[in-house]
Amino acid sequence: MKIYKNAEEIRAGFIKDGWKDPRFTELTETEARNKGYIWFRNDHKYFVMAASGNIFDERGKIVIYNIQPRKVAKAMLAVGVLG
Image (cartoon, helix red, strand yellow):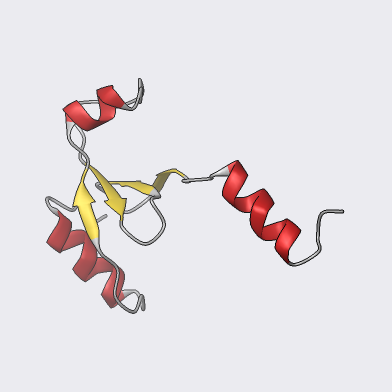
């Protein structure tokens, strides 16, 4: 299994898998602590996808979905899904 060492490597891996133009930044320990991500481990690398805000680990597996309830509810109201 491929282990990505930096944002450029994971980007290249996603492009190889068919993604159009994914952008990633590495999640630092400081950022993780400031956001309250108690699951963050120093012996792993984590990457944030710019377009979605989802967080992936060094294997390219999703760790956290960036779900924003207010944004989702507002969009659902706009298209008439919520009453």
